[in-house]
Length: 223
Image (cartoon, rainbow, N blue to C red; front, side):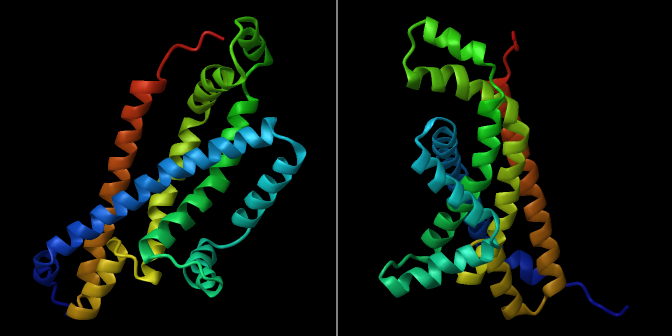
């Protein structure tokens, strides 16, 4: 093996790598927050909404879960402009990620909601709480606590899947790596560094999720 390792050109481009890393973090975090909001609304619609709404949510979930994320990304970036709806690469990537996470997380949140004992809901009614208060305090928080590991795993998968958005020229970490590779031809060195960055991001997100659990969801279960 006569390959000569040269990491110099890669480390010289650290401002670009830093910018790409920040874009990946920003895109992933925003998609996580918005995707969770979509999932909560859809889970509520599936468990308590009227039949037409439940049907629409089921169609949305089946379409997203049974098509590749890359096709969904192409739909928002390439297909919608044909009918006059145009997005920037960043916005198309964000919307595709939100729709994708929302569909997968809806079923996770729904399972958590349905795991709440009926007695707790009846107790909320006995305390004269409104439907919104019951859903927020009696149902949603314990449900999120029960499904937190599965939900955070889905968040991590979303962050890793964000690398796909480079195909529409969104300026994420993978896109930066591809540009550097075309300029320096140091493929091995570049993708070793990018692999390390994604690994660091995964560990960092996992640590943040543990802190969030300790801060907001780690309370005694008195059921």
